[in-house]
Length: 327
Image 1: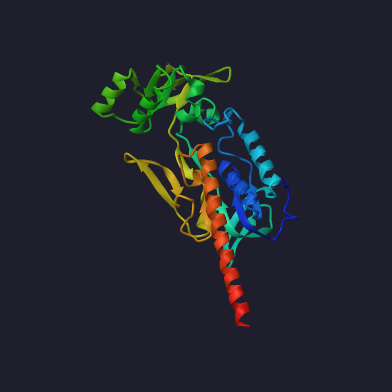
Image 2: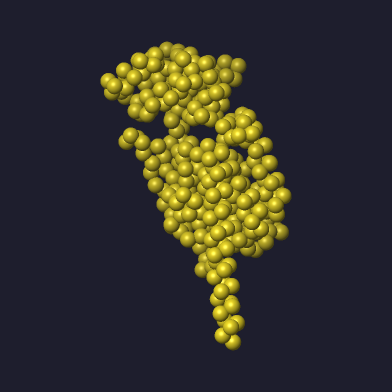
């Protein structure tokens, strides 16, 4: 890993912005394809608060920081370069892109792979952010096993709280819905919750109870206490797409059952955006992607980028040959 920009090459075939599972996986594929690759990563993965990654074959319980370090080493092992730092802005050139670095200076790229992830916008409950990724959770496939058979509370912020409660009920017999700001559920939803033994507690959640640095319960209006070992919330997933707006790309709102889930950057199945030469991968394009899904997206995007560069190289070679034959 490189800590400064003084000895960076002026131009790369691909610059990867973001060094999580998507960016590093894409960089490995491109480096193995003998492309010149630079990864620029600020070193602050979305899953940093979690003790380990989950549902990734052979990588379960691996600390997020260790995963990133191992990925960086693999990129370097195949000849790629990794710069710890930020990207200030992206600029389109007539023959590629200029990447302005946060620490000063810039590099150029023939193609871009942007894997900047997303930001989890959490409900405004005192103490919630401090427990995020530990015992304040959102994804049962990421964390359900770790809190199996524990009392789990669902923070209601919309109608999707019912869906969440019934899903988390797979991991525990003790699931409670905290109505909070969700409002009134339909008669059908109330019946479904009752059939699965999921009670609903009225009132707004005003705080968390923590004992020995572990969630013990939540406080509801009127100082009522609801015991739980895990609190499930529904963040608004907001794509980290500021850099892409420099290139004319906009985010798209995602809704489910009329509820806004978040925003993402639209792209095709291989991550190609509407701007030629720019690909996206991971949570910036797929709000529901887990670590393994993001890695897969990076691999697919890298394959598409390499194919695009191959075709561009063939076109140049054909033009050169034609010119030579015409002499």
